[in-house]
Length: 160
View 1 (cartoon, rainbow, N blue to C red):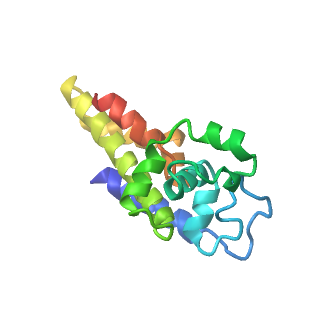
View 2: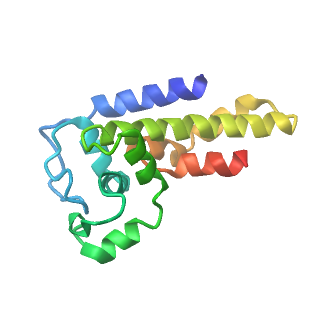
């Protein structure tokens, strides 16, 4: 529950802090959200979330031109397809909910990381509350900020 509360607080403050009138004019490397229409699309554009959003909307890479670098960039970004495919599945193949689903999966990965580390610590005879420290590390928090798969992947590795 602590992990979910921390994730909620971090995401809420991040979303609230986005000024839609003062966006960075630099273009993302995926064309999907060149002109973001809401704060979630801005969050997706901050990091590799945009690549996972592209994979979620085109899981078989039939339209690599959505990547500014074309086929080479699409192939490079598709090396880690799990989050894109999960997003495609949970968004039921519809583009509208993709940013929200990406954020939800990032939160789930963050919470899963906390749970996996807490479980492992408890198994080793250490207080599971130390897992909270892992969640405060920048690498864990950036997963929430950039909608990435890293916390989910680490949670699966630790849990395995």
